[in-house]
Image (cartoon, rainbow, N blue to C red):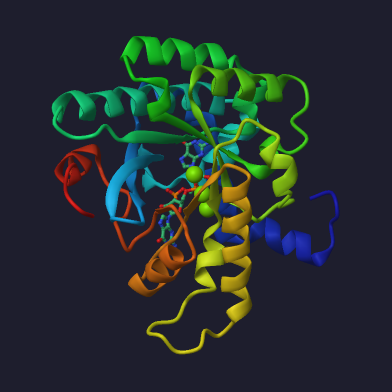
Length: 287
Ligand code: C2E
Ligand code: MG
Ligand code: MG
Ligand code: MG
């Protein structure tokens, strides 16, 4: 705004951009009180074993039921929460709520194999908070077994995670908690390095599966996509990692992923993110 050229001035008085900026400010200033007011909720999206289409786990995805702006998806507020640090209390709430819910499914459906819950963790939660102590306390409080909790971190969060973050990952892994790399393939893609970290799951970014966007058995528009994904899956397996594919939207994509050895699928083909009672309805059923 210091530059008083024509474009900046026009931007300043553009009502739409101004409204957007005011919304951002309004959201940022009400993030912390919103946690205490209970305005956040979690939806859960099925993680399905490709081999037999059975529900294995769910990813917890946060939503903000804002009194003024309605239901907001995380892309509207996670960045803000990371900037001002409120991701730390929000992330703690998400973890506690997701673990409590996972334990409740287990107790309510004793005849079914328990499902795990996968929770997104922001870099700042590893750096600016005692994530290990928080996780230990939450598992103890909720009674959820550590192997039924998976934490999703992005590549950039763990790459170069010398020192404190690496110690935290190691401690969590020693507890039995699974660590997954989210949106894999969008960053450094250094599988060799990742394999030396206490990571057990790769979540292939949705952009790879999108390259399979064709139906039927005709020649794919870009056969290289499938070759690359197959090679990544094989390498991951040889390094002792399991692979989850994000954004599986069609049965043709699922069939190809299954053929090239992908372990787990997540996407609209199986289910959109849903409230917890809808997951209860899926327990024991083929998704
Ligand atoms: P993510 O962890 O990669 O989560 C997957 C996102 O892909 C979700 O968007 C989900 O709704 C969407 N998705 C699932 N299946 C499909 C599909 O078949 N097609 C398409 N096009 N999209 C699909 P959502 O819920 O809007 O979350 C966006 C991102 O926000 C998440 O990406 C994650 O990075 C972040 N996020 C969500 N919840 C939390 C949280 O509790 N803490 C933190 N730190 N970040 C979170
Ligand atoms: Mg995720
Ligand atoms: Mg993801
Ligand atoms: Mg993604």
